[in-house]
Image 1: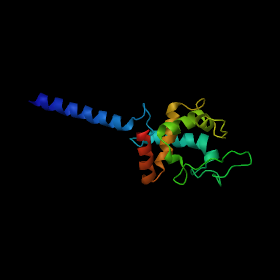
Image 2 (image 1 turned 45 degrees about the horizontal axis):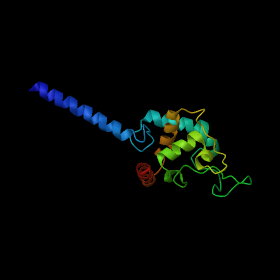
Image 3 (image 1 turned 90 degrees about the vertical axis):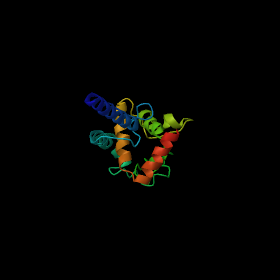
Image 4 (image 1 turned 45 degrees about the vertical axis):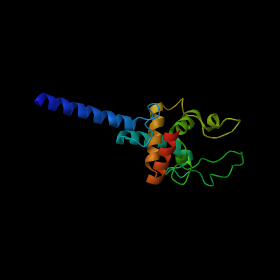
Length: 153
């Protein structure tokens, strides 16, 4: 009988672990959904943001001033990544592709943007980490909305 109890406990622990993995891994291994993200991943994402994103998008994710109005070049300033911006309106796969390939590659049709692709300098894990960091700063309402659009996509 004790062997059955131990086996049941072991199977329960395995199922619980599998459930955590399922919650954390979405969109073909993308952990940018609001599933479980470790403190280490958030710290990695924050550092990537500081190193690669903050110079345009602001130290506190505030974006450039008047970000909705075109610059003299016709391109738009860097948008905020906080709740005042539109980042949280986009599904995970779109956000990932924008960081990896650049905005112009995603929009297409000759669209020009100052947002380069970082696929040559950031690993997929770095991209996921920076997106997880950005999302961790959003209020609950924006995180829930962004998770819904990611799941619908």
